[in-house]
Amino acid sequence: MYYKKSQKAARIGVLIVVLELILITALVAVLVLTFSEERAAAIMQSELPAMLMKLELPFRIVPREKAPQPDVPMAKIAEPERQPERQPEKEENPLVYTPTEITETPPEPVRVGYSDEGITLMNRTDWEIDVGKYLDMPLPFDTENLTVLIIHTHATEAFTMTEEDAYEPSEPYRTTDEAHSVIRVGDELERILTERGVRVIHDKGLYDYPNYNNSYTRALESIKAHLAEDDTIKVVIDLHRDALEGENGKVYKTVADIGDTPSAQIEIISGTNYSGLNHPNWEGNLSFAMKLQAEMVASYPTLARPLQISQYRYNQHLTPGSLIVEVGCSGNTLSEAVTAVGYFADCMAKVLGA
Image (tube, rainbow, N blue to C red; front, side, top):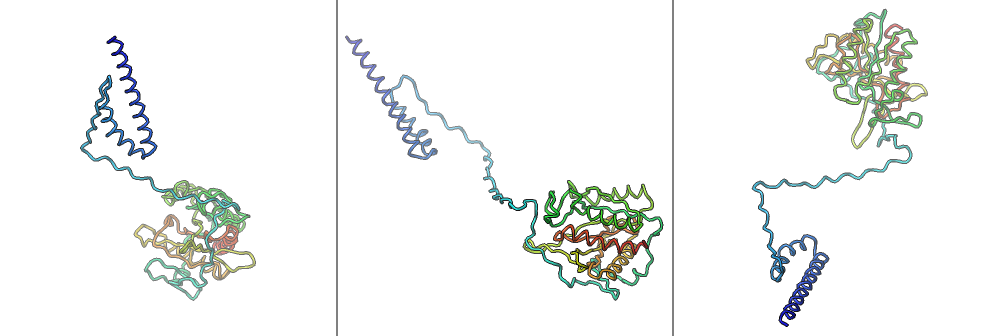
C-alpha cells in the first residue's frame, strides 16, 4: 500500500515538474515576443537559470561561467560606407556624354607675347621670345627626302558625340575605336600630306591604354624605334585633342570661322629645356612652330590658337622638327576636328615646300 502511495506521489511530482517546464517554456516564448532579442537573452541568462535551480529535478543545473575577457581590446568594426545611389542611364543614347554646357572660347585670348606678324604666344617660361628671330631662321631640317612621323601619345582621346559619330567609350571623351578617336584626325592629316607629295608614317599605337600613366615614356620608345629604322624622319607630329573645362562642368569648344563648314582650332605646343632636361633642338623646333603659326595666321586667320611655349620637352628632343599639335577640344565634334586638321595640313605642306 505504501509502495502504491509512493508511486502515485512520484507520478504527481513528475507531473508538477512537467507543468513547471511547460510554464517556463511559455515564459521564454513570451519574453522573446515581448522584448527585444537582446533583452530576452539577458533575462534567460540571468533570471531563468535561477528559476530552474529552485526546481527539484533529477539532474543538476550549473550556471555557465562567463568567459574571461581578453587582455587586448577587440578591433572596432566600422560600418560600411554608404554607396551612392546609381543614376539611371538616359534612354535616348546611354553612350553619349553630354557636357553640362559647351561654350566657344573667348574671342580675345590671353596674350603673353604678340608680334607684328599676327602671332600670339602663350609663353610658359620667363624667357624673352623674339618672334622675328625664329621666323627668320631657316628650317632646321632638309625638306628633300623628308618623312613625317605622326604619332599619338594619347591615342584614345575623342570628341563630343553626335548621332553621326557615336562610339563605345573607354572613358568619357575617350575610345579605343580609332575611327572615332584622334587617330581618325591623324588619318586625315596623313591623307592630305601624302596627296601633296610628303611621305608619312602614321603610328596608331595606343600608348595611353589601358594604363594612362607613363604614356609619354612608351611613346618615346616607339619614336626611337622609328628613327632607328628610318633616318629620313625629321618631323614628328604628336597629334592630340585638347580639353578646356571650367567650373561646374562647363566644357569649352574652339571655333574657327572659316567657310561654311564648322571647324575647330589648332594649338601648337613647342617644348624647351627650361625644366633642365636635355633638349638641344628646342630652338629649331620653335622656329618650325613659328613658321607653321605664321602660315595659319596668313591663310586661315582664325584657325590658330596662341602658340604655347612650354617649360617641358614632351619627347621633342629627338628630332629638330618635333611638335605637339592639339586639334580642337573635348567640346568639339570629330567632324569639326577633321575639318580643322585639313586646314592645318595645307599650311604644313606649304611650309615643307610641298
